[in-house]
Length: 65
Image 1 (cartoon, helix red, strand yellow):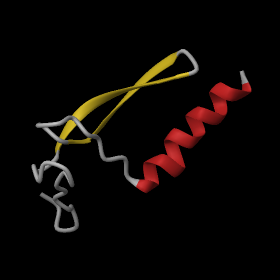
Image 2 (tube, one colour; image 1 turned 30 degrees about the vertical axis):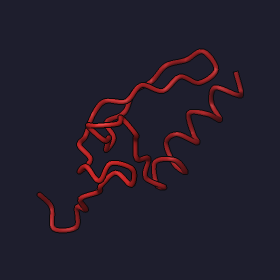
Image 3 (tube, one colour; image 1 turned 135 degrees about the vertical axis):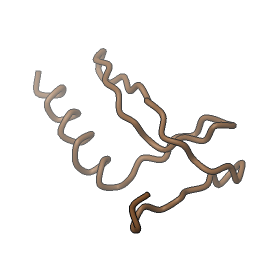
């Protein structure tokens, strides 16, 4: 594990998050990304960098169509 890699826990369940493929659907299009997810309740942690970067780009591209 990288020295800077953080271990995140679910705020609801206190379970350690595990990387899992998550499906997103937006404007009728589906895409996936591996994200930290709670194995108990299924809540997904979306890092700010991803939300402001790749996800925002996909939203913009789909809205322009």
